[in-house]
Amino acid sequence: EADIYQTPRYLVIGTGKKITLECSQTMGHDKMYWYQQDPGMELHLIHYSYGVNSTEKGDLSSESTVSRIRTEHFPLTLESARPSHTSQYLCASSEWGGSYNEQFFGPGTRLTVL
Amino acid sequence: DAKTTQPPSMDCAEGRAANLPCNHSTISGNEYVYWYRQIHSQGPQYIIHGLKNNETNEMASLIITEDRKSSTLILPHATLRDTAVYYCIVRVPNNNAGNMLTFGGGTRLMVKP
Image 1 (cartoon, one colour):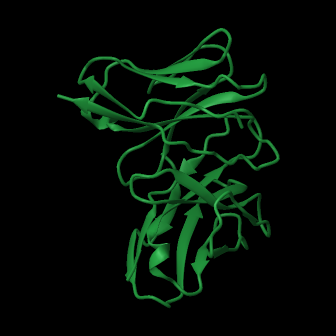
Image 2 (image 1 turned 90 degrees about the vertical axis):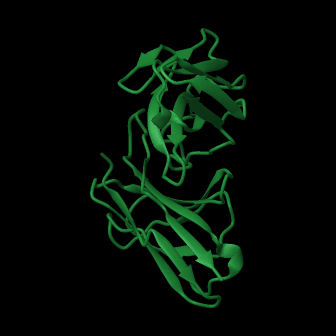
Image 3 (image 1 turned 60 degrees about the vertical axis):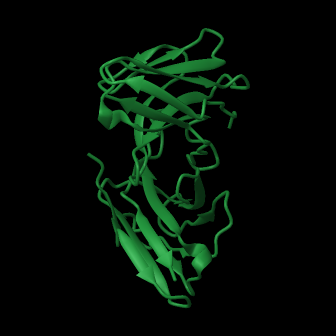
């Protein structure tokens, strides 16, 4: 059972609001990831982190920002939400090392910006 | 990471084996084959992975051809709860890109009663 949590699960907000999507894992994983997925479409990596104080941009350009102050916490922030940000956001984590390389995914946050 | 090709959709009768193919003809010697699935509205779930030998776990079996250019994920007795999108991913574990997964379109498996 994966111990990775995302809050909120669903969020409907108005344009221009600042929002933070929370992601926490209790597995002690160094690596964490944010993916974005539109309905019925592929997942795209938007941010990842190797560990505390490490953040990198992923394959898909995103106006969101992330921080990694604690190992277990990897929040994603949108300073001014727009309707184009409407999507599902999935957080994941994995260990460092070995071939196993499994990523554990959270349940996702479905964001709707009106 | 090597590219993969999967059929966009497949049907399977409940209780029968579901065989999901994946082509990865440009796979390199140190790349593993990983399978994930995503049930509607949930996060992806790891299923199995392998390098060149066939692998089996409680969820599925993975058959990799001798030349490693293709593989098949087998769900031996598909249930309605196995209805999901199945992703085949080929990559080097722990590469400099930080273990990122590149998800393609996957195969949408529909298990029917």
